[in-house]
Length: 201
Ligand SMILES: N[C@@H](CCC(=O)N[C@@H](CS)C(=O)NCC(=O)O)C(=O)O
Image (cartoon, rainbow, N blue to C red; front, side, top):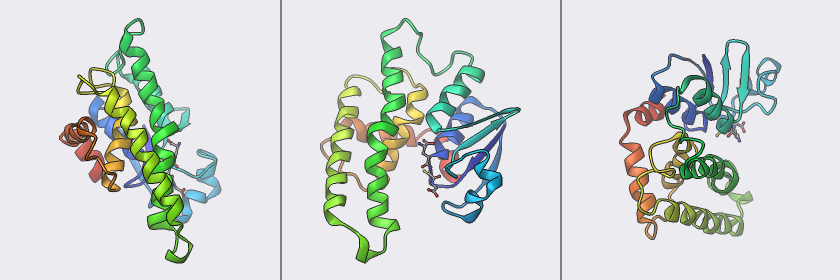
């Protein structure tokens, strides 16, 4: 398998997943925003010129959530996916999709408003609104973690999405002071050797 990856990006989710599963893979490294990500050759694989993209034999797939589902369906052997007739299966799907739907849009705005835009173009109102909504989106995770260590009970594929989004939010300085479950969850995830390896990749 070949994984197109950039440090400090969502492709870390897939490195983490492949490490947790102990699968062999080759990393094709980019720097976020570099020109090579917009070259026609790469756009054939990922029309948005983004990471991650996974190539597995004849299969090319982008969108981190889809890649998590693909890898677990094909190589997971039942690991990290709750039984389909269990209550946890719905939690698993919910948190697998929640990250891109609800957390990352606010993370994207915060990154743009604090890092990408030149100071004169930054909009403090946009930033404050995104920070408020990020906190609100993490409050749902706080509730979801009540009485459990992971969002679908046992460690699952949903961690690579919502767990990763929480780790990124913490790194961006999100206020976790009223979110003790999320805070502990982030620490629990960061203690995993596979995530540490992915963060260093
Ligand atoms: N929804 C997509 C988002 C992919 C995405 O936006 N990736 C960012 C890195 S986190 C990227 O490649 N940005 C490069 C750019 O915009 O030039 C996914 O989850 O895979």
